[in-house]
Length: 362
Length: 103
Image 1: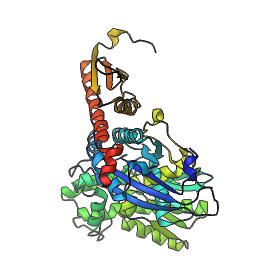
Image 2: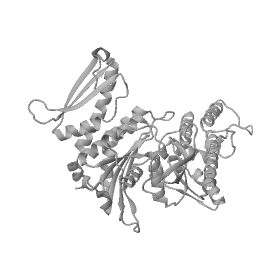
Image 3: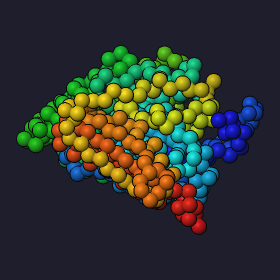
Image 4: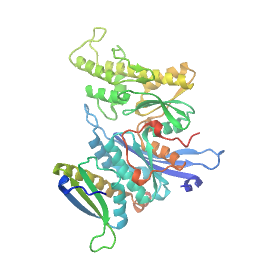
C-alpha cells in the first residue's frame, strides 16, 4: 500500500455507469506525495463515453441500461487505454463507481472492473459518484473553497467541504432537478439525443414571450421538484388541447421549457445562495449534467457577482457523467491508503456524499 | 453453512463453464461471486473445480437452486449475461491483449 506514495507518477483507470452514460477514463497524477511543499498535478490521459439513449417519450430502464453497459464496456475501455497510450502495467489501480445510482447498471460495470483488477493484479477502489463530480470540478476549475451545486438527473445537492467531509447543506426532498427536466421532456416527446435536458435548453431559447405559472418550491435549505413536474405535465396536456396562456394567447412547448427552466433554476440559485451565506463563501462550483446548462450558469453567475464572487463550471466532457472523475477521485483516495477489497466491491443505490472520509484534504 | 431443505428449492441447475486455465477460472469466480442473488428464493454456489483430464481447477461450476422454474430461469439468464461480460473482458483486455493495443 505504501508503495504508491513513493511513486512520482501514478495512473488510475476509472469506470462509471451509474445511469445511462458508460464512461471510462485514465488519469495521471504527478508529484511527490511525501514532500508537503511540492505540488501534485493531475492530467487527463483519456476520457471516453458512450451514452444509452432511449426513444423520445421514454426514459432509460435499469435492465436495458445494464445491457448497454455490458455491450459497450470492452469497446470503451479499449478506446480509453489506446487514447491514453498506457498498458496494464502502467495502471496502479482500477476505480469504479460504487454508488449511488441505478442497481443493475452499477453492478454491470463493477463486474467488469473487478475482472480487470484481477487480470492485471491491481487493487480496486470503489468511488462515490458525487465525490467524483466534486473532485473533478475542483481539479478542472481550480476553485478553492466553493459551495458546490451538484445537479444531475439523479442528484440535487448543495454541498460545502468542512473537516474532511463533503457536507450536504441542502438537497431535493423528492426528485432531482434533472429528473424533473428529463421526465418533462417525455411529456413533449422531446428527443433524448444527446440528452433530454440539452434539448429542453435549446427549445427554451425560443421561448421567453410568456412566463407560465409553475409552483416555486423552496423549503428552507431544501427544494422539491415533483409538484412542479406534475404541474408542467398538466400544462403540456392543456397546450395539446389548445389551452391559452396567461395573456390569452396559445402557448408553445418552447414557452413551457422556458418557464420550467426559469422556475427550477431560480430555486437552485436561492438554495445555493443560502448555503453561501451560511458558509461565508462567494464561489460556486456547479457539477453534474445539469451544470452544462448555460442559462443556469448565467443565473448563478449573476447571483455570485452580486455577492462579489464567481461561478465555476466545467464543460460537457466533465459535467456529464464520465469515467475520468471516478479515476481521479479514486486515485486521490488510493494515494491515502484507501482501497476496496474484492469481497466488498459491491454497489449500492444509496450512498450519501458525506459518508466518504475525504482523507486527501486538510 | 446450514443446508436448505431440498423441498424449498426444487428447481435446480448446475453449469460447468470450462476456462483455458485455472487462473482465468479463478478470476471469473472472484468477480462473479461478490454480488448476492437479488431474490431470497434463489440460492447460488460458485466454485472452481478440476474435471477429468486436467489437474487444475479450470472449470467454473455454478449451482443454482430456486423455488420456481421461472426464478431459476431469470437468475441463470442474468448470471450468463454477467459471465459473458467477464469472458469478453478476459479475451480482449488481459495484460497481453492491452499490450497489443499499443503496438
